[in-house]
Amino acid sequence: MKNIKLLMTSFLMLVMLLSSCSPETYSLDGQMNKSDIKFEITQDFVADPGGNTVIMKNTTPGVILTWDYVTGKSDKATETVKYAFKGNYTIKITAVTGGGIVELDPVTITVTKDNLNYVNDPLWNLLSGGVGKSKTWYLDLNADGVSKYFMGPMFFYGTDNAWLEGGDNGCYGADCWNWSPEWKGNTWIAAQGDYGSMTFSLDGGPFLTTDHKMIPSYGQESGTYYLDADAKMLTTSGATILHTNEYENCVADWRTMKIMSITENTLQVGVLRKGSCDGAATLVYNFISKQYSDNWVPAVVADPNPAIDLNGGTVDDLLSTTTTTTKTWSLSKDTPFNWTDLNGAFLNNWNSVADYEAAGWTGYVASDQTNVVKNKISFSNDGKVSTVDSNGVTKSGTYATEAGTNIITFSGISPTFPIGSSWASVSTTAENQWKIVKTAKTGNVVTDIWFGKRDPSKSEYMVFHFVLN
Image 1 (cartoon, helix red, strand yellow):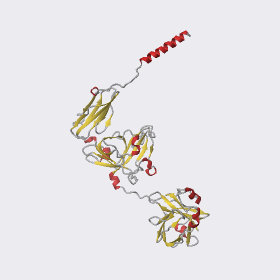
Image 2 (cartoon, one colour):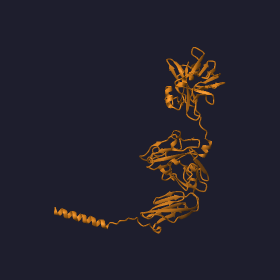
Image 3 (spheres, one colour):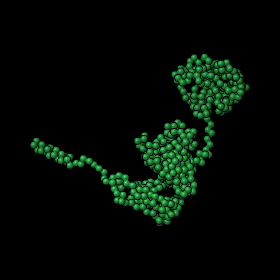
Image 4 (cartoon, helix red, strand yellow):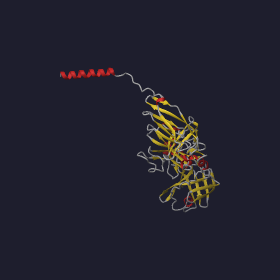
């Protein structure tokens, strides 16, 4: 027991002695003198008589040098840059040391001859239009909310996705995935507006000018760029690519990006999103050329024709002919109106007047039912049509049907009916048309028709439910 006590006493004395010897304050190494930071910048006149090839080498252990060489930036220990155009290039050098950041004296080198072989590459030509030319690009979302080529202005990829024509369909590691959202259904990814333009030039140098109309803090910029055609990487200096404001603080470097794809009309570039912003990912911005945008004509896409039951005949048979030459249809008292998508699927789950009342905003209530059924339309097999509304107003005219589309076009009459006290009303399109969107049978007879009025600004119909008298 005595030995244990002596051992414990000795241990405590040792701890106290060490504690009294420990410093109370700590400091970083003193800042290095810039004269102590060594590097080499040399021009390879064998490779290029004009000195276009420049080699930058860091020769100071424990120090990281960042080279800003006008057409791009790098922090590699040894970096080789090839200038295509003659001129004076001032290389700015920043040292990261244990004592802090040290700005070194810039070095200016002179290139005496053009070497256009360094930009004579299909990718350079696609990006800029070629030597002596320039090319302007727009983000593929305009002030009208239209994306002219892509589904939207930006897509999302994994951090290991890159050049989409290489690797395993653009996969170069474990983190490969993609989500290509349609902007119309995901407007949160980018604000609607005019994002301005960016122009890549090879007229006298690799110049980049940008006009950030949606991000005033960037405004109009002028700088340079470098395209590594082999690595499919694009770097810029003094100017930043167009992008959305939604991810402004989620990207650490807006001036170093992957080329994901490029054609004569389209360009996709990717920047890395920080892990703190919903996880690390590659944000891919989609661009179209000015020429493509200026010459773009909206494709005319025919609406789908929902499959409907015509009771074994034609639209004309359905509307007007069974055993008589005229059929009369009354507006439904239970479900007089609704909306559907272009394939005829209802957008509101309304099956009774109580559902309209529960929705609150429709304005249609049970007390309207008595008058609503007084709205009637009659079709005759000689092409004549007549209406009577709940106020007793009658009208007449003619109609024609279109085989295959189930569209009805009216002449001399525009069927119009009030729907009780609701703000809604039955009417036709600007072309004075309806489309039969849905039908329903009672037994073996079609007794219900939903006439659709196409919305010109949305992919949907407002539908009016009529029941066979």
